[in-house]
Amino acid sequence: MLPTFVVIGVLRGGTTSLSRYLGAHPQVFVASQKEVHFFDKHFDEGLGWYERQFQDAGTARQAGEATPAYLYNDIAMQRLRATLPDAKLIVTLREPVERAYSHYWLLRAQNRTDKDFEQAVREDPTHGWLERGRYLRFLQPLEAEREAGRLHVLLFEDLRDSPAETYAEICRFLDIDDSVLPAVVGRQINAYVAIRSMRVRRWSGRLPKQLRDVVGRVNTSRVPYPSLDPELAADLRAEFEEDNAALADWLGRDLSAWTEPP
Image (cartoon, rainbow, N blue to C red; front, side, top):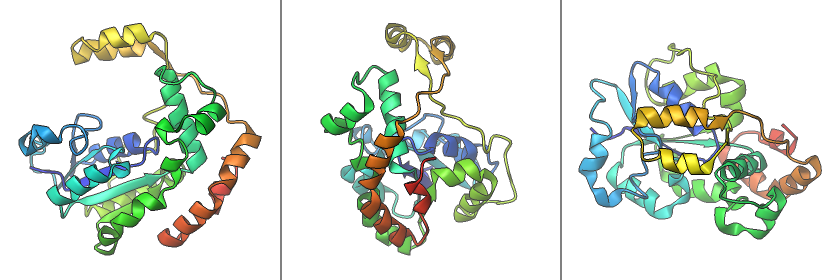
């Protein structure tokens, strides 16, 4: 079996929570491996490798996976379309500055940057801190999918603030029972955690998954990262005004809330 839907983006946009919510629906199977990465990292493994990620789908009405990096990778999206021409695509969008700041703290926790946020944004283009938030450039190539009813775009803020209603909307898009509301819906799944020791993290990667998970829990602490400086946030949000206005027009919905602090 191959997936009937794929959550393709965006990074730090609630995709982990969404995949967990969907996997709790009795009519849905979601690949157990978080971020399968077939179309960008494992394509050479062959279609059989991808099919095995869904071999336990059984009689599920829908099967899918979530790899939020796909949206940003043109080659991955070309491969996905060619391999799964009828698959439905789901994209979650998050206010661009908050998305970038969340992404920054994830990489900071992994010791992949030692700069402060403003330095990282202004001086280090490697991670595309702001470019990844100019969503329309990544969505426009999906116009055909949108016209065919195979693209669903939702907001991280809707999933956070109105989880039941947003979940029901996604269920209708996937043609599954929208009266089902698993208990997990609305819970924060992928909260920021600080890693106590990168050495232990690297060492634990060689352990069996069950032990690795235990070590991972001990080696992390769930603490909130600092709030973004309001003045810097306002300056950065101003840089997205034109992009967000064009996106709002394309989506046909109001994004004015993105101009205000969360």
